[in-house]
Image 1 (cartoon, one colour):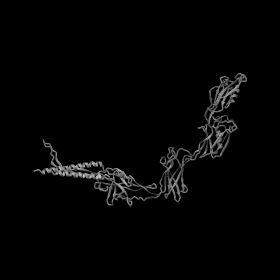
Image 2: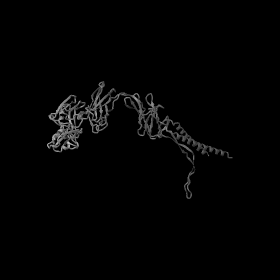
Image 3: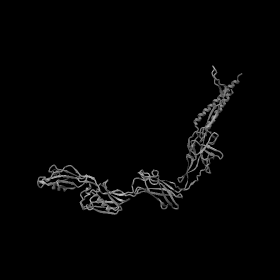
Image 4: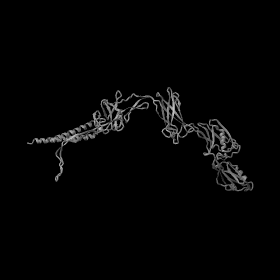
Length: 639
């Protein structure tokens, strides 16, 4: 009867231990880095009442008969699952995402912790602020962070360029004048009578017809017969008196009407009256007749162009006046027949007048052109006309010479870069890139005279492949001497030939910049941060970043074998296995997260459920003791 007391007592003790574990977990629910514990029970040995027997003949075997002797606490282990990371914003509050522990030392012993509430002491040692223990780096050594570090200046030795020089050529361009109208060859509209002269007529009768020339208003032709017939000459003379048309009698006695203009705009339309029709008498058709057009060549006569309003005859003159490319006046007279008759002859005449420009006839565009011999701004002008006092034979106003292409200087792209001398003084150097007549680019470096002197600052012949990649050598040298400093040689890295990692020449706009240079002035510490590898990076006022220290991360073959010693610390045990101390995010080690702390991984809801279970277990065992006590009282009262 006494065994039930012992069994129940063991159950109460086991559940009490479980309650102790649960209470400790709940007490540390808000402890950073705390890892919850759990309890595992196992039964005690059992008392054998009857052993098992094997089967024998007609009798079957029997199972053993045992009575258990209670329960015991078999295992208490730790749950090393990741806790939630809580941002604090403090630089040296650190957490680990993944496996590992921060390593610390009190000078005699090494401790390990998931809680990185670190900071600097008076001697700039990195320590745990709760205990003062020194933090260890990946080599297992305590380290300091020198926040008074100053980075000395560094003179610029290289500059990298990136960006685009535009492929579209906007300069250098030569100024070009072009005629506003095309020089097209053409023939005039002609109409020939079909009836033979003399024409039968009534003496004293007037015969008429209307003629429209070149789409103009109708012009009336009237001829009065002085006898029984009209001659072809009489009719031709009457037509010839009209505007913009001429008439003659050919060898067959037919009347030939010819419009003054050439080409498709040249036309003749006869509108006869219903009676006494001169058109019917001579045999003129009533259909519209037009001239023809064809491409002009340099050999085309000026009189055969569609802009012709009449016919130049030998001795007629054409006046040309204007200014040469340099602004000097130009004036000359072309005499038809003497100086020539064709477009080519007129072009040769213009070339004899201009020293700084060249005249030409563009057969493809069918235009007269005048182009300056040099690129850049020019003062070209040209006016061509038939002089006053001479009947206008050509529509030079329709072929006025106007600027087709403005003369411009070379395309230029500037990029300015900050350059440092040996003393760390900043200077601005400008490289101006200029497109050359052959399509290549030259770069010229300049800087203010007060800053120093450019000893060698020219990059010549920068050229590109058809796909816009660099084709010339990708490295050049800039030699400068800043005031009060020795000469300084700077390498200009322009890109890799055949690649697009430096300067390019695409159709887009200019975007060339000095992407990077390696010099800097003196720098003071401005800010600190911790990388995922645990490196303490110092950011300095000169843009430089320097590693000022590094946190070590310890991992173990069996982290569950570590022994908790309080203060969020763990120490090695015979079963923790091999220690590996390394940087963060290396091998098994997790990432170091700056500005954060890992929260406890205690699940409060789960712990409350476990507490109810432990409480009920304790109560059940207590009831066993109570029941056994009552039975003993009954036994004691037997008489």
